[in-house]
Image (cartoon, rainbow, N blue to C red; front, side):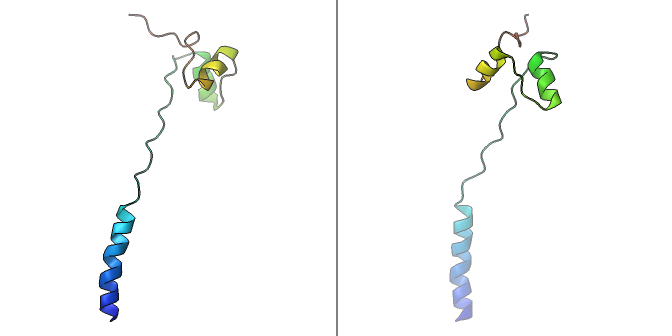
Length: 72
């Protein structure tokens, strides 16, 4: 009887464990321009407190004024 119980519970527990969703992907860090105020604040372990940077961060973006795209 004990063997029968194990034969039923083991596959059921494996199926239950396999049914869990995968972990969410890690957040990608924003790409700040080297030497910008945001880059310096991040390296200090802080958030940039310039008004333009705070506004961009609320919109889940990077401030275009302080982190200008590299011109080719």
